[in-house]
Structure formats: structure tokens, C-alpha cells
Image (cartoon, rainbow, N blue to C red; front, side):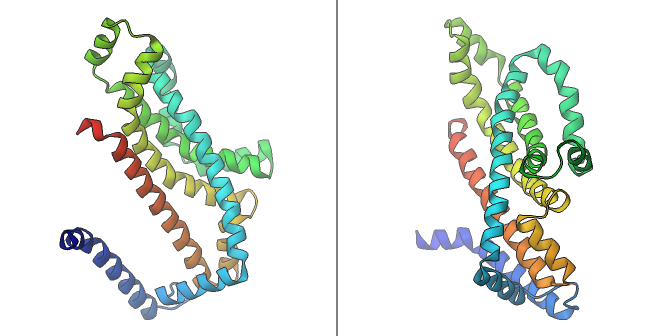
Length: 250
């Protein structure tokens, strides 16, 4: 069993070790004004942790991310299933969803700033807009892929609309929706940093901006590394949840 686990996880850890080695070599081979080695990045991260500044800014960003991301889930998943269930509504709304999904949300930040000013609420709106459309789109596609025979069978047994949603639509759609959730995690992190850059400098975005202005390349890489690790961890958790709810399809 131990040997099987080692063989299964060995490629992952070998890849991570190789990536760190390449980062270290590349950082030592170029000017530290453009890139720093992995070891220097870790030292810079440790210094930020010791000062306590990183923890405070991290929690500021976490509050922004979680608020905008959870709102996108609360709106995106029910709306996606409703659009899939009500055909007339889907036909009327779907073009706008596709347009907004393809729109670079960074371009809307000046418009949001002019309407709402600075503060927490406009930043939450930016994160929400970055994250909500992948959730809606994938949820709609999942609900639309339900075989008509399943709905016909449920209706033949005189299932109520609530029972149809509970027993057919939600279980079948959830794995597809989780794919959208994993996509939304990465977009929400980008939206979080964009909001902190352009609306009011707080959180990890402020750390990156301050380090950039001070030509502190190690500080920039340390902040970016933490954001990347958070994104990977959250998407991995989303994949585990997706696989859990998709077991019935195997």
C-alpha cells in the first residue's frame, strides 16, 4: 500500500521539486531586479510574517475574496438552474450572460468606481462580477444536459416541482456547477487583486503595489506565491467536492 501511494504521488512531488530547482537556478542567473531565487522569496515571505503586516493584509484580502465569492455562488448556482428550467427566460437572458462572461471585467472597474466610489462594497462587486459568470454558465450547461427521459419519468410519478429540483436537477447539475466554481476561484482571486489595485489599496494587492514601488522583487514574488498557493488549494478542494458529488455517475 505504501509503495502504491509513493508511485501515485511521486510524479507530483518530483514536478514540484523540479519547478523549485528551475526557479532557483533562473533566479540566480538573472538580475534580481527582474527575478529572485526561490530561497530569497521564502526569506522575504518569512520577514513579512515576522512583522505581522502580512497576516493583517492577508485577512483583509480573505474577507474581500470570501464575500464576493460566496455571493457569486449564492446568485450563480440558483440562477443557472432557473435559466435551464425556464426556457423562455434562458433565451432572453443567455446572450447577455455570454457577453458579460466574455467581457474583460477590469475594463468595468472605472465605471464601478464612478458609480460607487471607494470602499469595501465596490471591491466586493468587482470580485462578484469576476466570479459569477463561470458559475452561471456551467450550471446552465449542466442543467441543460439532463436527459429529458429523467424529467419525464419523474413527472410520470407525479413528482412536484420541488421534488423534481431536489431529486433530479440539483444532483445532476451539481458536478457541472462545481466545475464552474473551480473556474470562478481563479477569476475571483484575479478580481480581488484588481480591486485592491484600482479601487483602494488594501490587502495583498497593497503589499504587491508597495513592494513594486520600492523595487522589492522578493516581496512581490512572496505575495504572488501566496496567492497562487491559495488558488491551487481552493481549486483542489473544489475538485474533491466535485468528485464526491459525482460518485453516483461512475
